[in-house]
Each structure stands twice: as structure tokens, then as C-alpha cells.
Image 1 (cartoon, rainbow, N blue to C red):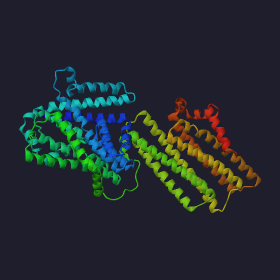
Image 2 (spheres, rainbow, N blue to C red):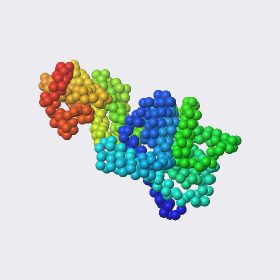
Image 3 (cartoon, helix red, strand yellow):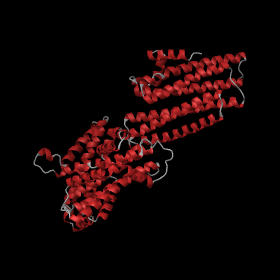
Image 4 (spheres, rainbow, N blue to C red):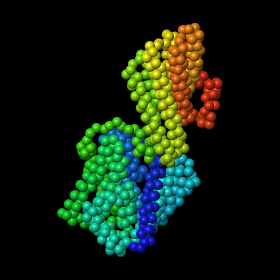
Length: 584
């Protein structure tokens, strides 16, 4: 084999690997997280888990990606360890689809149409069609569809190029001796595992083995241990991804490894023991691409059928290997960044937690004004610390997400979440300011007049309802819910202005001290600012849901001003309704 042949083979492997990566990335982007959400929801029993795991892996063509998603789901508390057993078993079956596609190279026919299905011909056609979609018809999902076609085309081209580059190896005695040594089951398993771990893809390593079959030196007793090892090697990525994760996430990765090692050991004993006794006629049969693909598929199906009845025992085994309880779960798992749609879901859920913490703190702060409690104040400050921590985590997480290839819609969602988390954090700060007023009153043994207390109850009630409606529209993402926030926020503004006037009157009449008056004005300012931030959050939801996107997106201030000046009958109706409810 010359240097030219070697470089050609390395180039072909590179094209095959790049094609597989491109195809997998395109499939994941086209799914926009839908397949991942399928994993999360349809795994209430182990049979469903196997079917869903096989379907998802068959579509995204990466058992590693499926297993890593399971690790991330378990780490985030979205799934339980028991739910992942079936998915992992199914993932091993789903990953065999690529080998079946590459086995089309074995087609032998004079039919021109059937000849076009051979990788040598099909690769060029798919790559050409894919590049047209990818470069020229690149709107939305069509670009990702083009990426899938391009990746599949490159996969077939790499396969054909590899076969051509390996042709000189057919007559090489050294090459034949090297592969003959792989008939040793232990050496074959180790080499198969190492190659797959290096490539991070069992489908790619099986593809290379299929290309090598064109040399005519790959027999059953050589291919079998290599395929066994490939199944073990594919576990490396999920094991690495579990580093630093929760204990149950580590158990998920260990479950994948345990399942594949158990299947390998059982079938090595059965086949090698059986051959020693019965001398199987197929033992040294030369393998074709199709035979390797079928062996890969048959082995994974057989492993699943063998171990499926013992799925509970597998879970118990990994629980013993990694005993103990999990610490607090981290929702913002960086493994989700590989799938932006899922990462956005997790980030949105965490932003909602921030809103709920701000709501709890507002309620506690208002209650402290009348019923001061050191314990309540301590819990309020603890929640404020959590709010600040979540803001930092989310900000860093979403910035990392912007480094990924995001669609226009996903970029808009990231921007909206960044603004929303900032608004919730500021609401938390203003709630703390309200609590500080309560602390001042308590420490100086001061109390508002009955009139001032009643006025504050009305204003704080309106602000709390504004925040409640804000959280609701964030949960539902419904335009009808978001439109209810702004008229109530306007009522809060009107109320705050009225209370300031009433406060000035009390000062003039000597019914309120300057010291109390300062605290009263401070409360009005902080409560009003909380409602202002509610308006900002609701406006982000309106941007996503309004049919008047030109106005909402291009000039939000004009849109709000128009609402306040009678351009929307629904706004006017709600404003009158809330004004009657919160009347001084």
C-alpha cells in the first residue's frame, strides 16, 4: 500500500465521518427538540421505552446522542433512572439503520433504477441535492433538510472512496495477518471498542468494517468480536458526559455500559462455546456489507430480547455499583446545549422559577408591613439569594447557547428570556426594598395610619394581581392572558399617583410625620416599579403571540402608548374593570 493509497483512505474516513456528523446535526435541528420531548414523555413502561429509543435513534442516527440525552434528562430530574432502561436498549437497535443503508452497495442488478441506489451513485445525487437546498433554498427547515441530504451523500461518497482506497490491501499478507489476529475474541473486542471510542460513533466504525469487507478478508469470526467491541466503545461518550452530573445521571451512563458488556459476554460465551462443541459452518464465511449490517442488527435485537425481562435487575445492579442518594438537582444541564430547543425549555422553566420566587417575596414583604416576623424576613432573604444565583446561572447558560447555530425564532426566544430574567430579578430587588421598609418601621416602633394601611393594601393587592397575571401569561404563552397585564399596570400607575396626592394632604394636615411619609413614598415607588417590570415581561409574550407584530416588534413604546390612548377596546374595557375593582 503506497502513501497515496494511505492518504486516500484517511481522506475517505474523514469524509465518511464528516458526512455522518452533518447528517446527525441536520436531523437533530430538523426535529427542533420534538424527538427529545418524545423520549421524555413516552417512557412510562419499558416496552414503550425500547420502541421510542429505537425510533429516535433511527431518526437522528446516534445512539450516543440518545444516551447522552438520557443522562441529561436524569440529571435535570425530568426522567427517572428506571425510564432510561428501555430507551438505551432501543437506542442500540436504532443505530443499526446506517449500516443497513450502507449495505445497499451489495446490490447487484442490471436495472438502472436499482443501480442508482448503490452508494457510489446515490452519494453524488444526494450531496448535489443537499447542497442546493443548503445554499439556495435555506429558509427554515429546508436548510436542515438540505444538511441531512448533504450529510447522507458524503457518507455514501466516503464509503465508496474507502472501498477504492482499500483495494490494494487485498493482496497484502501483513494486512491479512493483522485481521486474522482479530479472530481472538478478546483482542477483537478491545480493538472494536477502542476504534469506536476514538470515533465516538458505533455506526461509523461499523461503516468502516463494511468498507473493509470489500477486501474479502473479513470473516464471521473476525467481524463478530469487532462488533461486540463497537457496542462497548460507544458507551465512552455517555460515561464522559456523566462526569460532574448527579449520581443518578452517572448510573444512567453505567446502565448503558452494563447492558452492552453483559450482552457481549453472554453472546461471546454462547457462540465461542457453541463453535467449540459443534464447529459452526458459518464460522469462517466471508462477510459482505449486508451480512455485517444484519449481524449488527441481529445482535442488538437479541441482546434486547435477552435482557429486557431483567431490566429491573439491571437497575438494581447499577444502584449497588453507585450507592447513595442524589444531592440537589441542577436543572440547567449543559448537555442540553447540544439541542437548543431543549435548552430553551429548561431555561424557560428556570426563568419561571425566578418569577415564582419574586412573587413569594412580594407577598412576604407586604405581609411584613403589618405582621413583622424575623423568620419570614430570613426566608425572604434566602429566596433573594437564590434569585440572584439563578440570574447568574441563566445569564451564563443563555450566553453559551448563543454560540450554537440557532434559528431566528430561537434567537428571539433567547433575547426574550434574557430580558425576562432581568425583570424578575429586579422585581425581587424591589420586594426586598419593601421588606426593608418593614424592618425600619419595626426597629423604630413606627406604624402607618389606618388610612395609609388601607391604601397600601389596595395598591399592593393590585400589584400582586399584576404579577400573578404576568406569571400566568408566561406559563400559557397566550395573547389573551398577556393583554390583561398592561391595563392593570396602568391602574397601578393611577393608584400610585392618587396615593401620593393623598399622602401630601396628610402631611399638610399634620396627620403624618416626615419620617413615616418618607417610608410611605418609598413603598409606592417600589410597588409601582414591580408593576412596570410586569409590563415588560407581558410585552415579551405579546411580541411572541400578537398578530400586530409589526407594531409590537418595531416600536414597543408606540404600541404601549396607543393602548393607553384608546386604540384597543379590549384594553379600555379591562382598564375600567380593574379601576372599579381597585378603587380608593
